[in-house]
Image (cartoon, rainbow, N blue to C red; front, side):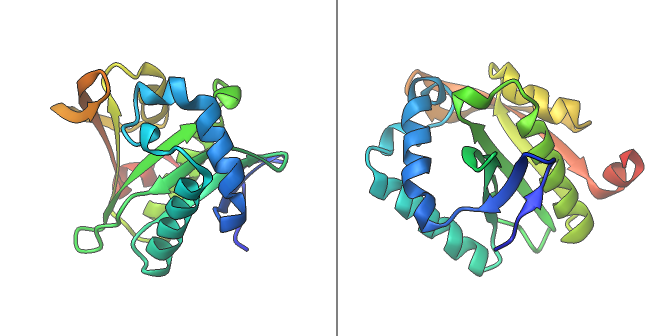
Amino acid sequence: MFGYALDDHVELRPLAIEHARALFEMTDRSRDRLRKWLPWVDAVTEINDSVNYIKGAMKQAADNGGFSAGIWVREELAGTISFHEIDWTNRSVSIGYWLDQHFTGQGLMTSACRAFTDHALMRMGLNRVEIRCATANHRSRAIPERLGFVLEGVIREAEKLPQGYVNHAVYGMIQSEWKRMR
């Protein structure tokens, strides 16, 4: 199975069906925090919802349309990171991510996003990586900012969450910029 070590204790690995319980439990533990930023959280009510997510991610990877990985810290699932649907015509992709509340503030997601961005732009030959975050989600926005992504604009009322619509900050990185920064 594919694995990509971020350091001696942290690895990115594809999610498999046997990870469904850990994924569901992580979602459930972080539900109150995640609900504020992610619209799908309330729809995940049982382990089978996590099984279905993993099956969808596996199919997307098999179809060369995207990729999802678990972030593993000392063999414990700490979060997920994904390439959303890859636009092969325009050679672009967006990255989505979230962490279990017990693993925030350790630089894990910045490292994972760096690895995913590098993989997209340098190994897959894509030209553009995008990250969108709710404008008020300062912790999530800090990740593309630390990595040198450019804030390209704000999309008003881009996503409906339980508390109402939120605006999205759109960050972009293009291959030529990434090469200069490496």
